Image (cartoon, rainbow, N blue to C red):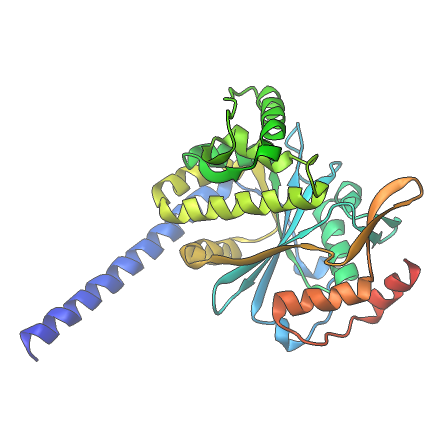
Length: 330
């Protein structure tokens, strides 16, 4: 073997060794920090899920709930202020984020027809996931619940995130940031002008909470997805800060995933890329039912078909009889 080929082979071996060391380090760190998680005893068999085709087998679907709990109780008695489905293509590592509008009119088992975000308050993550699976023909069993104060802490631990603030958003971001600072006993700095800038944790959380601009709650969910994307991008480019952030926020996170599932996610974190993001239902109208303003899918069946096309590339998906029955009652 020539010296040139031997040198190239040695470089490849060294590269592989470095990768293995990094993976081992990530696993060791994960096992060390796992104990800080508020891990809920959870079995997949407890959760209602639809029997779906093989087209969905190559995906990991996780429900992310954002709650505003002053007592840091993440399991019940609080409405989910943010509901996002993260769908991971296990082969390509591409991630799609879908915000489920919290006022979406759905059927909640044993509670009837009402707003989607009520499900978490009625029965915690189990009932919330069952409601999502029944109404949208999904098979989610994994979830992560995050207190909004965790957003503040993780952004600060990462050294801030870059976000473009519009002129319309500026006043609202400052108002909500001030509220966040008062609630969490933190200092805050007023944003003086619109444009791209580095936000602190308090400012980023305020940005997530803005609702009273054009688009209302719909554009609010866009801001939440923008912050998630910015956090992931910063964590990938600053792994040391990401470790600090993880240690900071783990006590404020609740999940039903076990060590093996979380270890797998943590190892592949550097390879995940948020490919697309959107809100759901795609076609809807805002109306009042029993005096409450709700987002009504038009229709639920057609929206579910489009959701499966968007997430899994399934053309002409036929909704289940469960979805069709719910649709007929709307």
